[in-house]
Length: 251
Image (cartoon, rainbow, N blue to C red; front, top):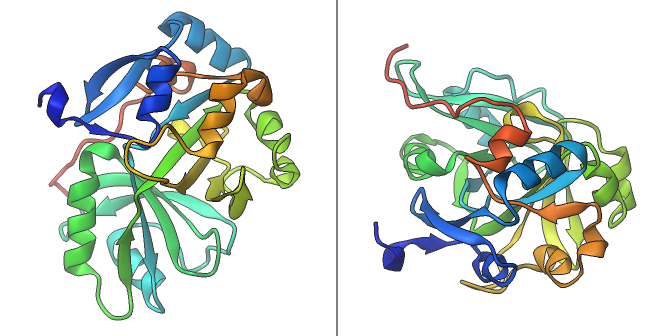
């Protein structure tokens, strides 16, 4: 795939404005580093790093049968999941083989909000579209997705929305942040602590949602968090060192 055919996240222009080095990854033009991998690694381990992970797949599964239908394809029990909670699970095919791993939560009472891996998202969405039955609907979301990780992540977010100071690990909520409708979850990459905030996309190739424009215009507003590059550089080394699950067709 050439640079001319790479997709972009809603924050593409903001990355370039901050001087990020951009490369192709998973069909998207993504920042591979800002100040440098080592500096961003150390800062995230000691303070907090802000990452654009908008290339990942996001969707809602809604309707009266949403959770029952979702459970047909995952080994986890989501019927007992209360509003404001989320769980990690696996998307399985008819033979029990792993298609993808995912995070699914109930930020409100309208079914589930699901995040899947970027490389498998089209396959995941096609699978659900072909197999969901009854009153269960898949809605693919075109939203920015930010992740703030590190020991001071919760402190940074609580400065902008005090209710987040009380959010526990693996909890989620629907909130207005910086005037934008967001789903916020207390979870991080590969199970590390942190927060994720999917927010509505403003328009293709916009300079960034208000959630990202704040640090772009004034880093002190997000201090001590700084914008960092996505995996496989800083984000993988600054959190838990694991690799995403690859599709498996064996039970």
